[in-house]
Picture (cartoon, helix red, strand yellow):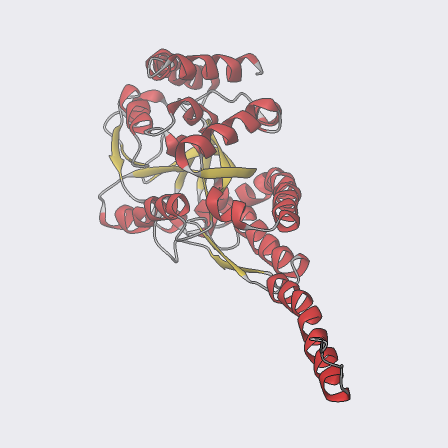
Length: 344
């Protein structure tokens, strides 16, 4: 009986070695191709050019590109280049942009229990130490967990623009001066309620329309941190700044959760770690430069005054009912407000 086994000739042996070597090389090639896969990361927000938070995003963009060795293609679009706040928020939820920043109060309609972290409903943060105790601890992580579950975004870090003050076309030296003042507010109910209780005339407008609205008289005033006043040149249209510190606005660094989950584990870890490091530095710089920027505004011809303590106390007293009103949205919201205030 003839053997069914054919001898291995030189040609067949060479063919085996050649094709076998190619087959063995395929996994390495596949791994190399996978390692070089690019993940586009569009970072878009409404913060002004030259502000500490925009500078932090510039630095983080560079870090992401360098530390990922090109695997993440981070692109930065500040100052509403890809649309206003509403567009940025929606884009981060559905994934058309990967990263934006906004106060947690922007989630008022979807997750009211975390809106209080954004300074709602006014005077909730007593000082910067209080802010850190809330956002850099267990409550800050809980806020991110809720946002991920309810809105599809993860808060990977918290930056800040700082305490907000009143910039107006006319001097505001007392609570009485707020009567009828047409002040721009974000398109959020809690801000409308806050200024209504103080006797002002809140006017909801997109962030990007503030300058033109001041110039045309649609509004008489805005409330803002000092960096944004300089960055967007709001002082060209309103030259009376009243220091009130009525609202502290943290800025959650919001990342589309589905996109973040799509990254390889090493990139996810790097992404979160670099965000925390970059925005810890941003907070430090923001606080260090606040007084310097206030001096710059004075040099630009802005009249600066502090609202007397007794008038500030009246503001806080008149808006205090918002804690109860806002907390009535849900038991979780009431509990969160209580937990935030307890750390102050």
